[in-house]
Amino acid sequence: MKTHSTLQPNLLNYLTIMFNGEFSATEWQRYQRQIQTRSFGARGQHALKKSTVAIIGIGGLGCPVTQILASVGVGTLLLVDDDLVSRSNLHRQFLFNEDDVGRSKSDTAAKKIQDINPFINAISIKERLSAENITDIGQQCDLIIDCTDNMATRYLINDYCQLKQKSWIFGSVEEFAGQTSFFSPETACYRCVFPEAPTELKDCNSQGIVGSIPSLLANIQANEAIKYLCGLPLAFQNKLFILDALHHKSQSISLTRSANCICNTPHLIQLSAATYNTCETDLSEKKELTVEQFHKLKEQEDVTLIDLRSEEEHRALNIGGNNQPYDTFMDNFKPDENSMTILYCHSGQRSRLALQQLTQRSHNIYALKGGLSAYLEYIHIIQQTR
Image (cartoon, rainbow, N blue to C red; front, side, top):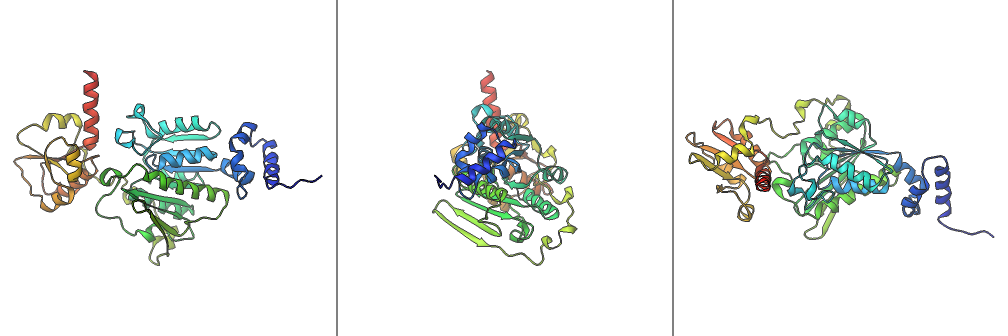
């Protein structure tokens, strides 16, 4: 008696692969619901296991992307991030908890991901992506996923992938909004869409982000990655997906390759460190004050303290000083060489950008390194040791 089941071909394919030593029975139990998916099957699971993905930035986007790809069985994940977990990360970076504050993001994520799925390899790379290390990282992987909030890094990823004819997934979130796109060598590239970086620095630390938004976009990024690795049709190749979660709207815009873009002559691309300033600024460290230095100076009479955050941020919590939001301060700044001016913001990004532009106009202007977030952590440590 013959029986007909849509699951038989997938299971037969799986058993063939399993008995070739590719999977264990425990892995089959773990992935069986995925294997039963018609367009996925055992071949899809096998493709994931053989794949290596580099995730650049283990933050609001990187945490859920990492969790999803590890859970579905992507064989090797390269987790690239030189940052430490801060308390201000926890509302959106759900892979971390209070005990992880101060620890390496990539190390912590790799350990937790390995616990989530012991059948995959999670490799921590405690480095900022740069022109010096991208080739070594990129040649190990089948796909690069951008989970940063840094445009210089995105330009670097884009140019490397054009040079080496690799695909990558872009992702960006801000407040209630997000964007993503799948870039491949034959389509429009990131520079076709964003030819120049904006002069005003924007990231999650300076613009703010609602905790639910990164996970929404990260799921889309991870889904596109899974489909690409398994050879399934892509939804956002050569398209820019734009999410407006505040009004529950989304749109997909078709992209056009620019005639003047470097993607038309990828063989001419040179990955030099000077081209990609991924720290966003060449500011001397001498102009940034440590939290210890700031703590000693901030109460002195000849010090003018300026909070560059928004009025809402200042009202919610501040450490004194005049509130002059970044744009207002930059438009009205007048040097006073008789007084030391110290700038602060949430993470140090806005104050560092202001310093970069104003240092030539005043030799007596400084910034709090790490911003309010670093100072609050410093005070927290002092209180714990008393």
